[in-house]
Image (cartoon, rainbow, N blue to C red; front, side, top):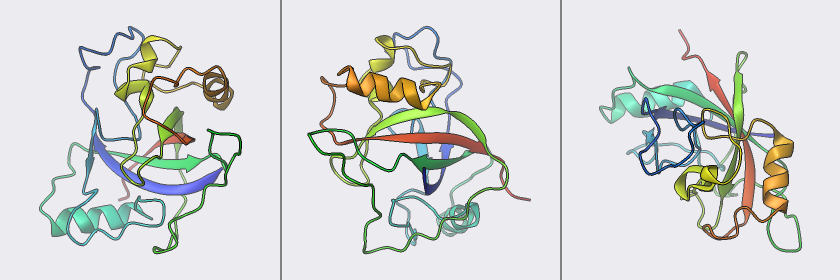
Length: 181
């Protein structure tokens, strides 16, 4: 898995009413369609080549500079499977060459599950499990994520995402991490 970076998110305490997936309690998706990514496109954001932050300190600096309150924010760390799914070829996942990626891997992280993420228009990705309600058709955990990498691969190979935003699709490991200090 490739370390991608961090995002701070506000996670609603319940799933959206329109998401007909009774096992889902809340949504830890990578995209910001259901949960807000904080400081994501703020002034002075120094994102890395994977369109995330290299460290929690970078998020805190951007939030402070933009008056963003992180008191009720959750911190997440992401890794990606090395190749994209979609089409005949599995292309490698590479950072945007215009930006450096010097991701600080957390000492403590808790795996919450695996998200399938579209990457059809760069940083504006979607998580079809929540964004397109695919979680109503496939088994997910309480956070609207696959419990295992193999479940994510099986869903991609069974065409569960055919009626969603176009691919390519990436599999991201989603970890919750404690805020430093």
